Structures are given as C-alpha cells and as structure tokens.
Length: 262
Image (tube, rainbow, N blue to C red; front, side, top):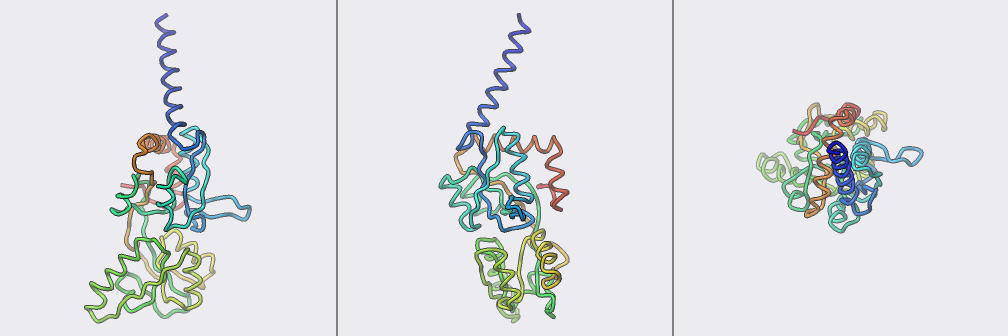
C-alpha cells in the first residue's frame, strides 16, 4: 500500500510540474519567441521558408523541455522588448546582448558569449581592426544595437580629442540594409555580430570582408522574459538546464561557433 501511495505521489508531482510548465506560457502548449528573422546565423529563413539558426534551435530545445512547440514571431530588432512587454510573445531569443539598460526592462537568462566584427568592402584600402580604427569613418549599424552608443562615446571621448575625426554612425532598420549601404559606398565600415559577419562575408563572395582579427566588444547573449512573469522565467531556467544535461546546448554552441555564457 505504501509503495502504491509513493508511486501516486510521484505521478502527481510529475503532472504538477508538467502543468506548471504548460501554464507558464501565454498559450498552453506554445512557446512564442520574438526574433528578427533576417539575422543569420542566429535566425533567418531558408529557401523553404523555414526559420533556421542557433536561436530557433535553442528555442525548439527549450520548448521541448516545456512540453510545448516553439512558434516564432518576426519582429524588428528595436521593437522586440516593446513587443515582449506588450504580450506579443513569451520570450525574446534573437542574438540580443544583455545590457544594464535592457535588464531594467526585462528579466534575462545568459545563454552564450559572442562579440562583434568589423566589415569593409573587399576593394577598400581601409582595414580597421579595432573600434579606435573607426575614427573619422562612416560606420553602418543596425538600429537598436548596443554598438551605437559605444561608438558615439568612443567618438566623443577618444576620436575627437585625439584629432582623429569623429565617427559618423548611420543606423539602418536591418542588418542586410547595412550591408547594402556598405556595398553602395554609403558607409565605409559595418559593425556586426561575429557569426553574422562571417556569413555576410561568405555570401557576398569577397565583396565584403571581415577586417578585424579579434572580437570587438565581447558581450553575453540573453533570453529575455517579461518582468513579473516569474513562472515562465523559472520554467525556462529549468528547461535551459535540461538542454545542458541532454547535450543539446553544447551541440548548438559547437555548430554555431558560440561560447558558453559565464
């Protein structure tokens, strides 16, 4: 009798945990993830219109451990946190850095380390390797990235006082539009996440090249959850740990040349 009671207790506990995970998302059985799906290798559409990349794969692994299915909501990068707080999706997983400002707007789970790279036209005589080498240049960036403020500060605090010329920062709605501006000579350099920069160089077949040898502004990528949604936050933390135990997390890091978050 005691054995039966113990078994029933375990079954009840398992069902409660499963119900908690399912109830933590806005729509039971679905994990809606906000991302800008124009950003390979993090997220993009393949030729069959499937969403592919490191972030979709992580989202699917997390959803599996939540006993849910991942659904992706394509959203412009600068609007991602607004959409999260408006309830358009459960979480953001979109190659987004964790910053103090963003941590005032959402709860975060660190999941990988990466950094930026500098891109220039293949025919350019300019080969900037560090942010300081961008002094006096027109630099293209995607709107909403952390590098906008960093380069503006560098320009004010270093470039101008040293007489090297200000950095002119031009912002564009998406990463492909920045690359197009680079190819059209509207900007002289592009700053992009290293993994994406490598793919841009490959896809343009040498028309755009990576000029920096080391990571620029290394930072931590995060999963973002609406403040106050403690149930989902805890469920995702648990699911993330499960992806580590299963080997799914390590496989994603290896496949996309990412480093584990500290």
